[in-house]
Amino acid sequence: MQAPESELAECKKSQQKTVHIGYRLRDYAKRREIRKKATTKNELIKLAKDVADSYPVDQLVALHHQKIGNTNEDYGGIEEILSFEPSNEKVGRYTIGAYESDQKQQYYGDTVTEEGWLTKKTSTKFGSSYYNAIKKSLEYALINETRLMQHKMWLDSAVLQRTVRMEAIRGARTKGHTDGGRGTHPSFVMFHDCGGGLRFRVWPHFKASVVRLGNMLCIPMNFDPDGLQLYVQDENNTNDGVRILCPPECLYDLKPYGLLEEYMIVGMKDKLVQIMPFGETCTTASPQYLQTKSIADVFKHAIHHIDNSYPTGGKKWYRVMHTPHLWHSFFSWRHIHEWSPGKDVLCRRTHVFFRALRQHPVGANYNTNGKVNFVSLTREEAMTK
Image (cartoon, rainbow, N blue to C red; front, side):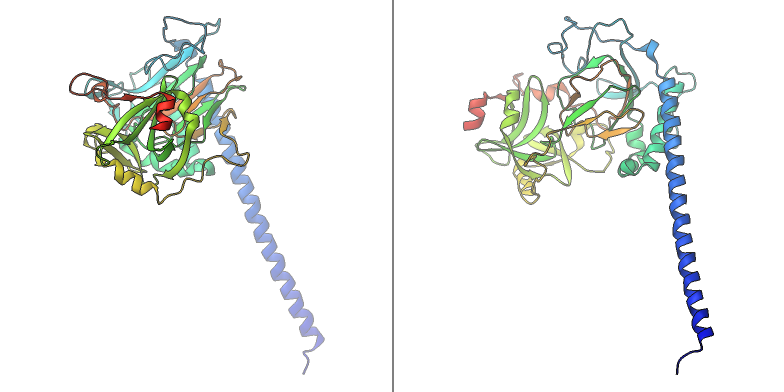
């Protein structure tokens, strides 16, 4: 028996009303999301402007080199990693953060907040508007920007935040290099002017992968214009590690083998590699107390994690970060990076990174006889070893 036409009409009207309400709810949610994104974007721009407005141009200090002028030649060592070109503009860098003296760490600030940020009201650095603007801007970005939320965990680590470093840099050009293994944390950079750019090489993954060089399995550890540092197995004992130093051209001879997906390699102690788990903070500032593994165990771990990040089929070897007024993140210890060629070195930029671990002492690079604890190989020797 069919329902009366009046009932059918009423039912159809009710269904249309339900669909209409559903569309209205979806439209409302969509508009709310759009408003939220617009509010977040406006706040990010405002906070970025605060960082730029407080940029300490007058307090920048340029490093002194024996030769100044040709940035392709003047690279320097650890303390002179930045090369500043002569300019009528104010160039240099200004640092806020912890510094190291012998075997202990000291801080410019004398108070640590509950969140872990160093503060000192009387300090020209930790109490400055520049420091406060960076802190507020980066915290907001890590909490609200989808592309940075994966790094939000670093805000909750008092160990890392007590070792925060902030640098204002202008007028500096660098050659391709990797940073030391001071922890598994990312680094952040913001450009305050258009025309700036930092590029990094997507492969290999230093301190976090195993590669092939000729017939050797190696752990790529560091790279700078002086050479490529690798850890390999001792020919007489496959559990022992040996440091080798190759010409920088050997970088182009490396082939993928496997990734270390659970930990990074920090250094070497007693021929064993020292490791630090990803995403885990260190309870001590000294690297000598880190867990160790034989290099053979590291190679066994890597063979189960295929490295598919090797650029093939027209994939790009480099990526460039250049958008101004945004925080960019990358792993400076993991990837070769440099100031992108052709970009304006007078672009003001702010760097934020952490030092959970102290730098390995220079003495670790020498054996008991006072000789350099590296085996130097030519490109030909490395490929045929």
